[in-house]
Amino acid sequence: MTLQSQHFGKTGTAVRFNSFQKSDSFFCYLAIPLQKFLIGHPTKKKETLSENKLSGLKKKHPADYAVITGAAGGLGQAFANELAKKKINTILIDLPGKGLPEFCHHITEKYQTKSVFFESDLTKIKNLLSLTEQINKEFNIFLLINNAGIGGTKKFDEADIDYLNNIIHLNVVATTILTRQLLPNLKKQKKSYILNVASMAAFSPMGFKTVYPASKAFVYYFSRGLSQELKGTNISVSVVNPGPMRTNKEVTRRIDSTRNFFGKIGVMTPSNVAKISIRKMFKGKPSILLNKANIFNWILMKIVPADIKIYLITRVASKEILTELKTKKL
Image (cartoon, rainbow, N blue to C red; front, side, top):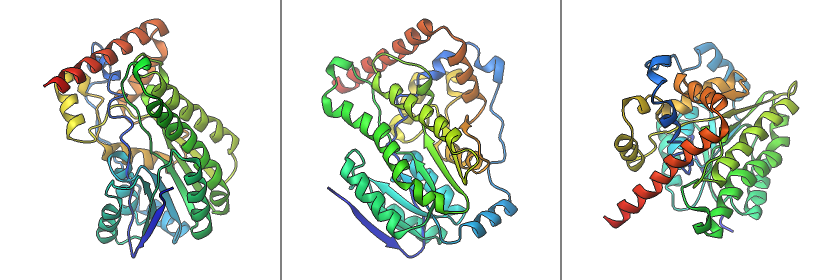
């Protein structure tokens, strides 16, 4: 088991396993013929909490912490930065060798908040239990962001067991166990929040991704059920369903090379996803859709007949495999 932690004087931090980089990209294809006509260009909205609300948040949680999994990069890192800007202390979790100590130190220096990091493989049950035991013993937490996740595009009969096992254990098991083990800690605070990161992929099965959308469907339904179960308590549960994001140079290159103007309408940066998600989470929204394109794609997933929907999405995923094969040959 690998489990390391370290405190920095004043900071906050977070990272992500880039779960949505490839697995959510195809949804824009379904919207290409209609998206511009129905929703036009996304409009900018104020994403920050008001000064009064932010001041009240600080008073409620002066020394409490927010836990962020997958905090070393991508969306997780964006969550950490956004919380640190609000002077919220953070507990950052990611795999060893992802640059987590450096990021933790960076946000400590930049935002002058407290931050702790743990380097651990969350696909291992013993790590989850050891980690949550230590957090419950040493920290008061008022916010849990289950952001860590993985996905990919493979033919099911060519996917090795470790690949399938890691998707299920990180996306499903880790989210469930972390929430269950940290729930007593969250219940002790005056007001607490859980934010689970699902995906637009949660709304449709697809070939060549098979296990990934199933795992994100679990996250979505788990979150909605828990939200209802905890209704009337001090804990608010939210789930966000991002679409494609520009998480790194490779993903940005793929998005730019495979989409026309209409398909790019729904693409967001991790920073914008984090800002909107956190704002709506603190407002107590149980299900978070991020912008007009996100909402449109969600509606599309609901109204398009299942057979047609699965066929179209699977065709896009198959092209993704062919593109990757051509890239490897080059």
